[in-house]
Image 1 (cartoon, one colour):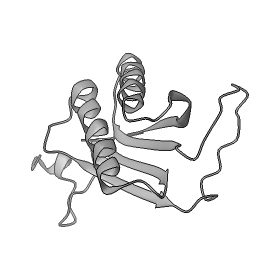
Image 2 (image 1 turned 135 degrees about the horizontal axis):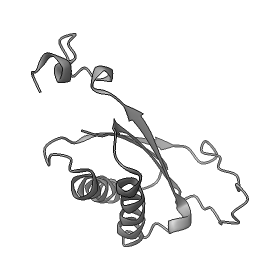
Image 3 (image 1 turned 135 degrees about the vertical axis):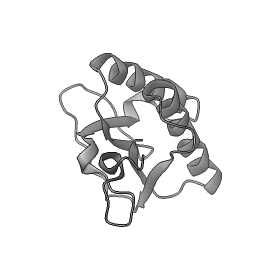
Length: 128
């Protein structure tokens, strides 16, 4: 059950945001075995100049079409993560997002790190 936070520069249409969301969800299902109905995404749109990404020495050109994706989830293997990075890059490229404009970060968590409401850790209580 990944929690996905996406940061983009404002200006995309509702349809473009929906396509971005759907593409990310499809990759989470395919590569992280996320249940199809477990869609936890927060998409933030920022004014121009509010996302500042400098060159890390790789020489990648960045544009205002940049997409930052942060995925918080329970452990996945290095191989699963690398396959997910490649798949997400390929899928978003079909939406007009250059691979150089995609930054992905995975944050590891444990079952004790999640509560889905009611003040309980449902993974620990057996509710999930």
